[in-house]
Amino acid sequence: MKVTDEIRINILNALLKIHSVQPNIRQIKKHTGYHKATIKSSLEFLKKEGVLQGYGPKVSFRKLGYNLEVLSFTQADLSEQKTFEKYMEIIGKDPHVYWVSSVVGNGNWNFLTRQVYRDIETFHAENQKRYRSMPGFFDLVKDTQSFFSVEPIFKNTSRTKTIIELIKSGGGSNEA
Image 1 (cartoon, rainbow, N blue to C red):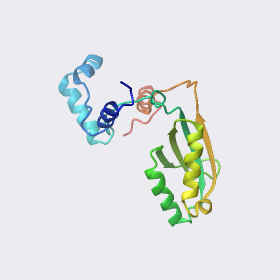
Image 2: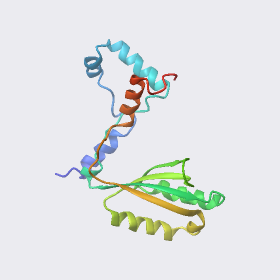
Image 3: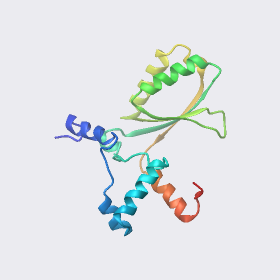
Image 4: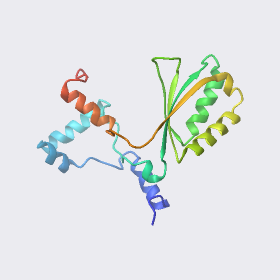
C-alpha cells in the first residue's frame, strides 16, 4: 500500500468536492463553548457572505513526492492579446501550475505563477516544452524570474489562520 496508490488519490480528490468535507460541530463547540445553533448559523452566515468558500484537506506536496515549489514572476507584453490568451489556456491546462494572478509592485512583472514539480529537472523540461509548443512565446514573454522554495521551511501557517490572527490582534480590517 502506497500513499499515492489509486484508492488514496481518488479519496484525496473526492475530499476537494463540494459537500465532501463538513465541519465537526461538536469539535467546534468543544473549542469555543458556543451552542450548536450559534455555530451552525455562524457557518451559514460566513458561507452566505462568501468568507467560507469550502472545506478540504491540507496535504503535504513533499510527502507526495513533489519536492519543488516554484514561484515565477513574468513580464509579458500584454499588447500581444491573442498570444497571451493562448498562453493562459496552456497554463490553465498544466497540472503543475496551481496559481496564476496579476501582480503589481517593483519592477515590470505582470503576473505570478505558483507551481509544483518533483525536481528542478522536471521544472526545466516542462518549461522548455511549453516554450517550444507555443508560437510567439518570446514575443509575449519578455522576462521571467523563478524562485524555488526549499527546506528548511521556517514558517508554514495557513492563509486562513494568518487572517484570523490579524483580525484578532487588530492588525486586519474588521470592517467587512
